[in-house]
Length: 457
Image (cartoon, rainbow, N blue to C red; front, side, top):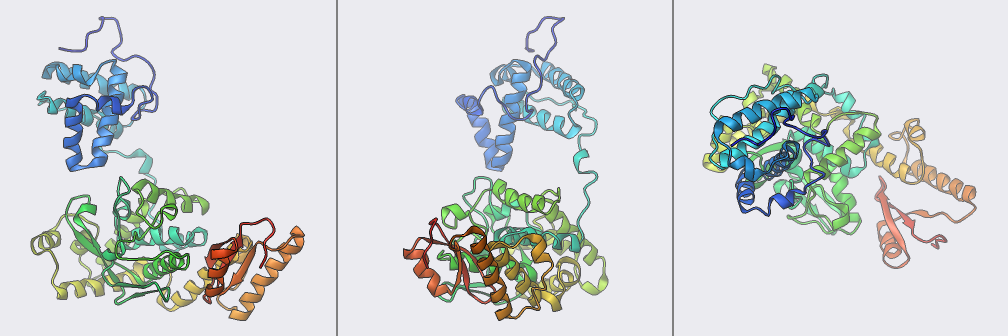
């Protein structure tokens, strides 16, 4: 039976209010119904994200129709089809895109099918596969991605590097609930020395495994991280160790700094990356990094001298294919094939993917470490930009930092709140004198800051 209404009464009442998210009836109220909870649980077996999105859309759909999931479940297929067709016209009149309308129709059809209301006719939606907000999105060039690094902290640089240089989804780095993500154990050729505060890679490009529980398709796969990505990850991990975090196989690769190195949500991963983009004046989506990998590696695969197969690129990105089927069948790839892939990835990444050339990489790492340290002691972006950080000797760099700190002290008329000390000295300050870690210097020294208004050294 269709939703009852007077013949001259519009099917929908009220304006749209944050379509897709309910402000009137919490979704948890819907889950108090055993049937709705069963539908939601079944969807979660496929995807927790899909389950929650469908629940929100069903809730909003019912609000717009002034009905309930229970009433929808009692409709016959003909009335349900008419309702969905009317819904398309309604949402279209309100200016929603075809892809958004399709999302609502799919969610409601899922609920109807759960209740054995099977609609066999096609609900036609013009532009259902269009993404108008993305039509003008341009994949960045390496030099454009390189411009972002200056605006990143160590964690942001590591997160961006992993997605841009492996092609992994943000949900691999940290999952929907934030209870799993890439861990150090997934970097099978990475070694950590907590005592010496060192990170090494036994092979570069280094191998990275995506466990099946982290995979969108539910199937394990693996990829590689290039040298530039390894170095940015190394800087981030060393910083965490110098802040007295003890890293182990279960440590998150990109961690929640407030929770002692645990994994973070997909939303948090995207927020970290988006913040760096906005700071750089760019309106990119975090997902553009995966598109960057796909585009650049696709171009490399088109060059015969690279020895790179498109099928390998699809596998590294977590798509289905013959390599994925082999991996699934045998649980691992032959060592000879892994090395063949590694060398092809190395050739492609050095010429098409990385944002710095091979012969400039050491200088790049020195420059970025120093730029980070200078920012922490008060240098502005413009001041840093005009310094030749690669050419400065260690003594010249130290003198530059000390002059800046002395100048700040005179300007404030009070003792400096920051110091540059050795790692051993930093332990004493941090453990017993009210100082906190602020960053690492290129020569192994660290920047600390007093939490007291009148610091004493």
